[in-house]
Length: 71
Image 1 (cartoon, helix red, strand yellow):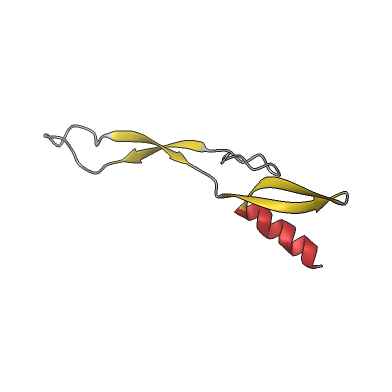
Image 2 (cartoon, helix red, strand yellow; image 1 turned 180 degrees about the vertical axis):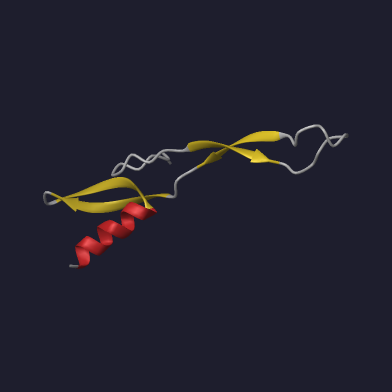
């Protein structure tokens, strides 16, 4: 599944994970490893212009869309 929201264009972002283990002496820095923050993307069916359309939507956009549909 693609991890990109088709509504707000939210994508995976990059960050660092800090391990609090100092290797050896106290002067050395704690090792940092790379990690990814992935958006929670769901594949849903919507009605657009009278047709059923499947879209990849993040959960924050899904909340907004469902709130607008209930009005």
